[in-house]
Length: 328
Picture 1 (cartoon, one colour):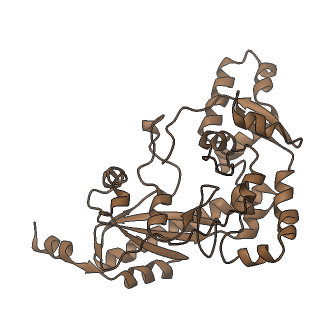
Picture 2 (cartoon, rainbow, N blue to C red; picture 1 turned 30 degrees about the vertical axis):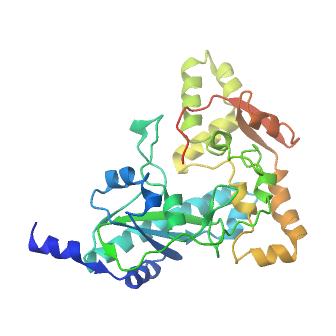
Picture 3 (cartoon, rainbow, N blue to C red; picture 1 turned 90 degrees about the vertical axis):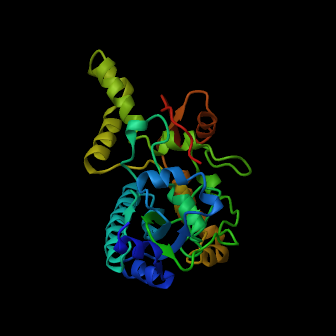
């Protein structure tokens, strides 16, 4: 080991300085996690696969514009997803460059797609941003299985940076969960993936919400290859569905849902307003999404098929699913 590397290995970095770097670069909040804590033992292999020199994790968030996420015009919400995602990517690179100037090296983890599709249908990601954010004290998992920040609630993007430095003070999970069990996410969920007092149904959620991602694309390819003619093809993918898939391929993926994020009143930015007038929140945000006329994609014989069929505004479409491991 060179003297230079030995000096860097023994250096302890200032948590206050690192957090200032993150906030100055555009993060709305940041927390720091040590790799050696017990809660990360099952995550170590994936983290070290991405960056073998990892000793700490910098977890940060950037907030969405909440009103965009709440709009019943879902193309508006989709653009907000992607715009905030772009800001997150840009901020993460800027943060790492500034950390490099302090002598700290590291790797930015993809905040979303693309991931390791060569492992499909197994676990295609290495680092769970949700686990990192919870351990960093940036929020807790809500009933909607989103990390809820104490100020911004569910309307946030998560990012993690793996770094090789030891930090003088680390953060820990919040003592209080911002989720206060309003159950609005369960009320608005078109597939029944979110249910009070029951485990989150990951397959119900991904089958519908990610219809225009890999699962739906597989179905599209199969329809193109096996259809006898255009009439046969359109019986499986009509022009509207083909158009949505084209839109996702050309302009980035369209999410079919995200309603649980839209209606969630957790976080001090919105909770007081909700509690002051619950009826207005339900009339203005929840009902337009719950009553929105749309297709809901489900697996045959699933609970989602039965649940979505109870809403007269939803057209149930039974599709083939994708085999994959469930996230932790």
